[in-house]
Length: 271
Image (cartoon, rainbow, N blue to C red; front, top):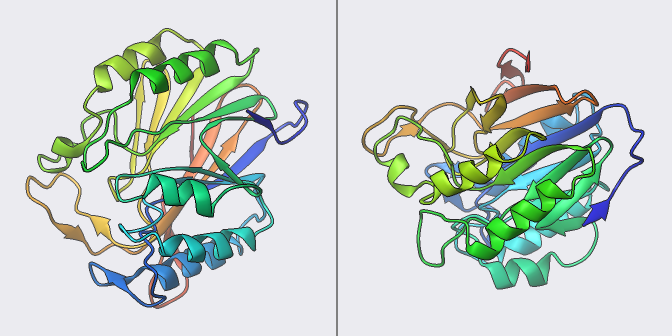
């Protein structure tokens, strides 16, 4: 557990980057996108808009099955001089991630209290599998974090999607015990949002009053609603989150155009 700011903070601002898929080499590509330059471009773009946030959130697949990529991740995110809240994805190497990102500014797992909000970081990874699940220990950690939030609003973060994405191939590699996870969420009225990565596309919905948010990758995207695997030509992206003390939130997906340096943004929305 970490307390990063005063509980009297009026608004908590986060910037979420997800699925950077870094390699040991600086110019290696995934699905036609050089992942490190693309991440750097997304961060540089975010720094031109309402920077700095109170913390940065990275929801998995920090590397692409290459532990040497963590040194780039450490260098890039340490330079921001902000808390960096991290959780693993199915392409991460958990032991290397723990070793390479030990200590400040990185927070790996557990929960963090920011103002009137508690940010819960879950590990949904199954070794050797693209799909995910929350272990009994992780579900117990979730229960403890939500039950002990002491009046704070909660945002729960994980890598794998807990609801269908209307994509046949993608829904085969989601959270396999999603019903158990959502049942746990339903027992706590302080959960305001669930945020994930993995799906390389934007998603924004509402379930029983809880905001459900998926964020596109800082590299290549997946085509929404595709039965078979397909790449979406949309550019890299990130998400901004403004968490208000009354439990509502304002969020925006920001698309980083590859050539113009401008942005094509989704409409901001609050709930």
